[in-house]
Every structure is written in C-alpha cells, then in structure tokens.
Image (cartoon, rainbow, N blue to C red; front, side):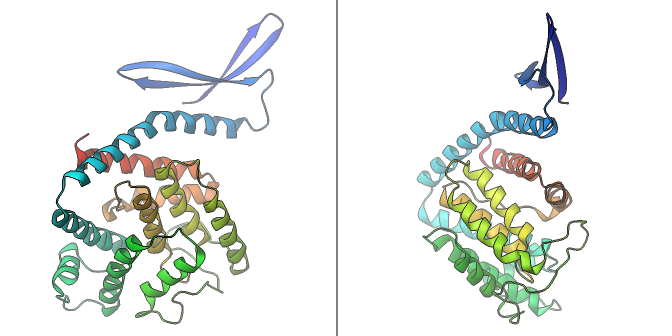
Length: 295
C-alpha cells in the first residue's frame, strides 16, 4: 500500500510518498519526496510512483524475454519456425474470435485453418471470419510500413467483408455499446478527432518500451471503438504488429482469462488511467513468456 509519510525537522514538515517492495526475499521501502505541503494532485503522484516502481521491477525482464526469443529463432530451422507460427496463428485466431463470441472450438478452428475442414452445424459467419482472420494475421506480419489509419481501415474491411459488408472498413456513424461493461464508447462525432489524435500519438512513440506500447495501442484503439464491429480483434492484431515489429514474441490473450482482461480494460477506460491495463498486460505477458522460455 502507498502511504503518505510526514516528517518534521525543526520548524518544517516534509511529505513523502512511501511504498514497501519485496525484492530478493527481503522488504525495503521506496520513497519519493513531494514537498513541504501536500500537492493537490497527490493521488496522481501516488499512481505514477507505483507505476514507476512497477516498470523498474518488470521492464528489465522483458529484455531478457526478447533475448531468449531471438536466440530461439536463430537456432530453429525455417520449417520449424513456419510450423510454430502456424500453431500460434491457430491459437490466436481461436482466442481472439472466441472472446468476441465465436462458437468454434480450438479443434474446430485448427481443422478449419490447417485442413480446410468446415465444422458442421456452426454459424457460417464464425467460419468465414476465422478464415479472414487467418489471412489477415499473415498479411499483418508481411506489412513493412508503420501503423496508419488507411491500413487499419483495410484490415477491418478484410476481416468483415464476407460477413458484414455494410460496415466493413468504415468508421462508424452510430453509437455503440459494449455488453457487460459500464464503459460507454465515444459518440460518433468524437471518433474522427480521436483517431487523428491516436495516430499522432503513435508517431511520437519512440521512448515507450515496445511491450508497453503494444498494450497502449490495444487499449487506446479499442477505447475509441471506431468500427461497428471488429474493434477488439483489430486492436489485438495491432498489438501483435507492434510486438512483431520490435522482435518480441507474439501474444494471445487467452479466452479462459477473459474476466481479468475485461476488468483491466474497463477499469482503465472508466477511470481514464492507462497504467491499470498496462500493468495487467505486462504481468500476463511475462507470465506466459516465462512458461514458454522456462525463464
């Protein structure tokens, strides 16, 4: 817990933000001096202080993940790399589609995308969008330029053109709601300026750690919710575009962990505090990569 510590020295009083951190089996206190009076933005300062501690603890580990990934790629035959990527594509397509309500199981998704076997008695839209997502995933990996609005519109069009052609690749002109959350996406008139702000922000991203950037790209874009459908899937593709471009392992947010995922997104969106989702994302990413690389 973050505490405000007050210390008197002579006639003066000094205020500090203080937090206990466990490191290498022991507990030590970290503190930050805030002044001789408590500032009005003390709550924001406390949150930034906590987030800085979080980054100091976890971000160096992300670099070790990148090194392990690079080493694995260098020692893996090209055919094995291709197969590994196909396995990820199937898992990612299953998870991201399932989060959005697809009825296809992991086995049905694998049979469809690997062998062309269409599952019986399942909605044709689920089948078509899984196939479209597979194609889009590989296209995303081949895209050499940086993210911009035109390419994101094209990705949404390709994802939905066979199932929802009336809204595919188009910025929404109607209000949308998200089932199960108290967050209300921006009104239609807000979407265009927010998208312009998003891509302006993205161009100034150089000092942001790539894994943090991936989390922020996902959060910011899905919060704008610019499309009538496909916002979550496109934002998760954009997330992996950032990771891939910076040579970090790709990441699939698991359907089984969707409850904590939804909660982290909603809290960040409602409270307007990005660090909530970033912390969730980085911790989940590290947990998955520790397991993958046995770190």
